[in-house]
Length: 470
Image 1 (cartoon, rainbow, N blue to C red):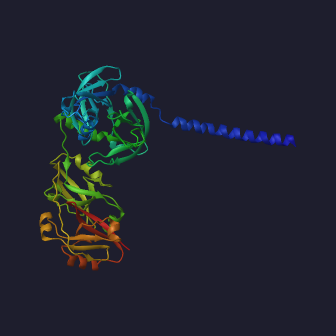
Image 2: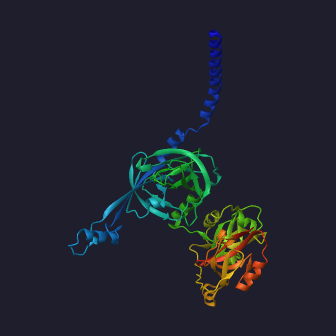
Image 3: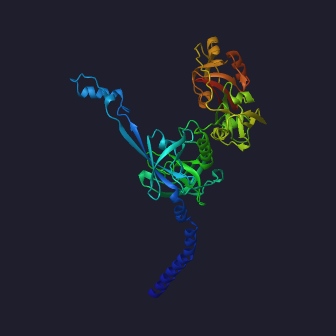
């Protein structure tokens, strides 16, 4: 009996060992399939630089009246005036990364790395140290071009950032926390990202999971071919350290900015003059689109290139110069790459039809819009869950609009769509409603179910929301 158990045990061990040996080649093959970044780092590290900055800060900067009041409370018997302006200035330092793009000393880094610096010191990979001067910086793209006086320097090669695919391996080299020439690898997590809090959207970022930290800013992001496809710029973090969500400026954008900085020291960008938002499912349904895509035109700004070209409110821009627009953040990016005065072509969905609209692109900054200041009157009830009233003649003249004001909100389709008390409804289901009577007439003609667009005026600008009737 014992011999039978022993033979069974040995047979099981043999089977397990055989399976392990069979799996070993697979594990070896998987390991060999992983990228080896050693040659990439060795070849490109000489072109990476460490950047240290010094900025003279007056001692009073950063002080507030609260601090002065606290000092007075600590010395209540001292009535002498607090002359904090006479306190000596102090230097404030910063660190970042950059990389050489030519053998005569031109270097790309971030705008925020060198902005306001009185002194910029560049340390090369071979420990040579140079003072750098700023050729030009661009805050909107966060790109800066600086130069050191040297020759025969190594330089990086650039790749096509448009060709980058999500899931590709990438490598960053920089100086996180001042640790010079440190390499970190990861993958491209997403493309076309808009960083939360960024109001300009003139950069469509490459998102990666590379461990980017403070000090990596301005350093290059390489593909496996050893080409720069991005400039590390920002991170999303709750602690100030890497959370695996970092953003790089696409190399194609950076090269365009650098070319302009090198030629003129400034950057010019195209402008349409429209306020836009994403097309969600409700908007797509309301405007008879097969799927959500494009940039929804909330408002065409007065006397803008878009207005002169014939763009209208509630148009949906689905392409710019033949480049598809899937999300609204892509449009400012594409427009910004066009030089002011150039002709462009918009592909637009209007009233369910696709049309082409030619425009001549303008230049930043855009123009402002009028502000509404409605007055309150007696409410009138309706089935959307809101009460409306006529807009006063004075308010119509000041704001340049006609509509009905929401005086009170209840639970219902309007509240669910995001309408607020005080909003001015100028169109309901694409029909103008200049007064309560016309509003009521359109309201009575609405279907029992479906998605209904409603155009409103809020805080000085127009926008279109979608009500869901059910």
